[in-house]
Image (cartoon, rainbow, N blue to C red; front, side, top):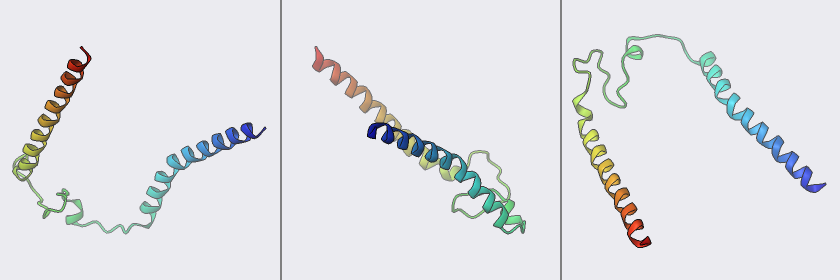
Amino acid sequence: MIQELVVETLNNALILYVMFCLLAPIIFYLISVILAPKRPSKVKKMLFESGQTPIPYRVSPYPIEYFPYIIIYIAYALLALVAFITSISLMESTES
């Protein structure tokens, strides 16, 4: 009896949680569309540069200012790959 009540409550809670997770973003988006000011400007239509000064026109498709981040990512990706391969080989060597 109690176990069935707990299972039913958990199922209902899961259904409510899934419904909330699916409906909340849609509701919040619609509220923001309704409440947001609609004054278009040149700056709002320019590309977003993540904290950088907006530039209306870019010559190069690959901006050079992000190059150091790419190099750091590649270095850490290679380090992670070497660590992963080393851990696999160490696990295999201890098994035999």
